[in-house]
Image 1 (cartoon, helix red, strand yellow):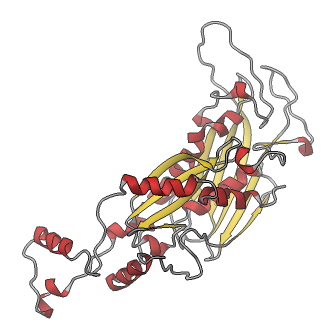
Image 2: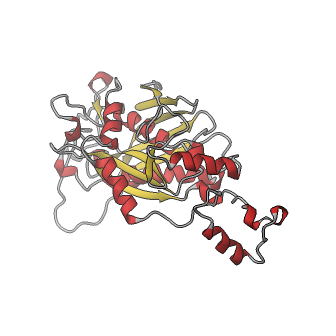
Length: 358
């Protein structure tokens, strides 16, 4: 996690108290009305930018707000040398066409993230853009939907703007806003055939959605953009959608990008998983009385001795920044909670699917 997003003004005593509260069974979160799987409430709306092909805005209860706009333009596809006859394939702007599978390219999607108070080349915007674009490209479905024919394709520009300074780590918020913006994205209906120059219908009412919605299919059988779910581990507990202060005491942070399973079975499927360096690694450790000469303790002679003494006091309640990464068993537990039937991913995607998209 970039250090700019990791600054939390909490003393070691406050960090120790917060960690002990989150380590209880069940954990006691900062918002006592929420359980470990509960997400913060939000307000969402789509089609807020009339000049864009798709857009969405989401505001969290803490005041953090994000706006996403999607623009599409026709671009030429560089020809690759191919032996033999080339197969002419034409898609219908979002309609399922298995012949277009694998024909999309990563360069057809361009994403930018702007955060107030940060330059475009700062660590936080670059890291967020990388996480979001990797999740969209990992599935391969989105880039295949941009295929027109062997000579032309759609170039998709996804512009993400955080309207307020990040009061919490904004990865989940930006992912959900991008999800809604792609669901609301429409592309002009194609009238030309095969490898002809693209000719589109001028009637915007006839435009085809990038992700068609079919009421006859169950939610798990529809193709949906991926959503990134943020989870932290504090002791034996796993907590989803953590606040900034909760991230400051996390043992490990996991970002799970998931989407619908695409079949008749329930649950979700994982597109990508990435671990994030928690900001708790950068917090200052507390000084126990046994190491404080002012209280009758013995000050360590070297940094190695200080580290050894802190390891011996790790379970004494004195705040010590966590060390190491996330164990495989913990990763397995998080992924199971996300993708299982009725799991976190199904709840989040189902809630986003219930938002009316024009």
